[in-house]
Amino acid sequence: MQKVLIYIYSLITTLGFSQVNKTEIDSTLFAETYYRNHFFTFGPLYNTTESLIGLQIGNGNNEQPLIHFEDLSADILYKISGQTDFNNNYSIDSEVSWNYPFKGKLSILSLNFNQSRFNENQFFQRNIGLSSRYYLRFTSNLSVIAKLSHQRVNEQNNLGFGLGLQNGHRGIYYGIRVDYFDKYYNYSAYLQSLIFKSKLSIRLTCDRIDKYDYFNIGLNYVIIKTTANTVYN
Image 1 (cartoon, rainbow, N blue to C red):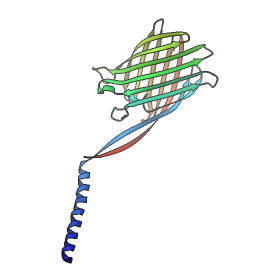
Image 2 (image 1 turned 180 degrees about the vertical axis):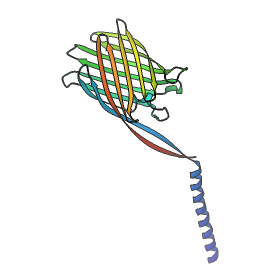
Image 3 (image 1 turned 120 degrees about the vertical axis):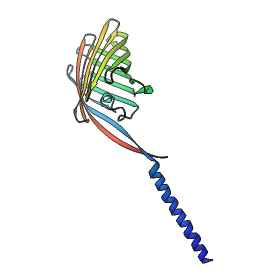
């Protein structure tokens, strides 16, 4: 009887060990690992026209044209910036974007808000807009920008529509846009370029709002955090 019990125990132990090993082998054979890159960008921002200094943070919104779509895995992108001279003059800017919506040629769909007050120029501006960027079919770099917005400049309130173009090359992109608001125009030109590997970039923007001109320069430092998610089939 004792020999029978020992035999049964040995058989159970052997089967159990084999099952554990089989599970480990199956897990190894059918495991798939997915990697996601999480971006965080920050850096100083300087308005040379009004001598305002500030800070911008985001998760790759401005860098989206510089990053391959498979590397920038976030669906929702954002950026927030603020500038001041610590003397009642300020400028704030925010944008929330949907990265590659509808899985088509539409590159990005954005909701943006910005507001500025410069007392010496007796200037106040507030803009709320919805914009999109669409890649043209005959090229992978050139895209069309369209924007619909409501803007207040001092005492004027107007709806406006804008059109622009953006082009990109390796490590750099640039664009222009013109917005029409009934009795006046907005003009915007910008350039962003990597200046140190994929970590540091410079951004230049030039804006003309009605008869007011502004020039901004900013540096963005990029932090990339990669996480892995293993799925067993």
